Amino acid sequence: MNNLRENLKEQIIEQLNLEDIKPEDITNEGDLFGDNGLGLDSIDALEFIVLLESKYNIKISDPQEGKKIFKSIDTLASYIEKNK
Amino acid sequence: MKLIASCKINKTGVYLNSQLISRNDLSESNWITELYYDSNKEYPKFHKMDNLAKLAFLGFLFLEKKININNYKDDEISLIFSNASSSKTNDLKYINTYTNKGNPSPSLFVYTLPNILTGELAILNKWYGENIFFIQQKFDPKFYIEQIKFYFSKGAKAILAGWVESNDKNEECFLFFIEKKEGKLTIEKLNKLYQNE
Image (tube, rainbow over all chains, first blue to last red; front, top):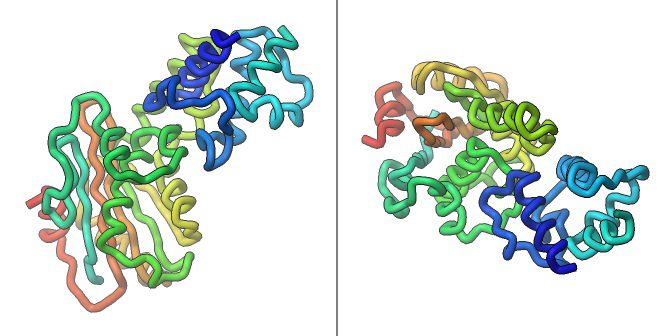
């Protein structure tokens, strides 16, 4: 399961073109969005939707779900584990 | 118009009012990121920016030490910027995402205009003044002085102006801050500052 989290960190860095960030800079439980986290915003939420579809074949049908799913690496990994 | 301060950033270092103030031993590949970490500023959004916005952001961080933006209301500072290559570097990265990687990247798409950097500066400072971005063949001090006069005539009290360039051969940022006060800014003076003389 930790592999999934580490893979997600690498995929997020690649998908969002965060060239300065290393996987170890991203914690499992820290916020991904907002100024206290990685500083991601609604545009990046689109990237997350693309990532879930392309890498995990998971479609998010309700955009409102995204806020909870994309909160942290842990929440994202849990959602993938339940839905893949 | 009175020149208050200027800042030039390129791979050789950071120059504030033509004086080298920061390291000049930056690496070839990620010198812009090195300058960000040297600044000790925490601004997570920096990592998402394209190099144009990163350079403008860093230029402002250094310039801020020599100017007092608190003297102005949030709509009294205008932004006048230009460069030669528009957002070409980022545009090519964006094109690569839909031609080779399968999906157009929204996070790269938002930087496919050079004037996004003026938006980033406005967001950083919560400014609501006028802003404009020109594409020109090279840094043209005469043009800037004409534009500065125009914006002062339209009510601006101060102007943050700059040339921010990013292409495959060169990355540089030159910012200068002008106040609507007694003083003379000449084409020669502005050109010398840009040339770091």
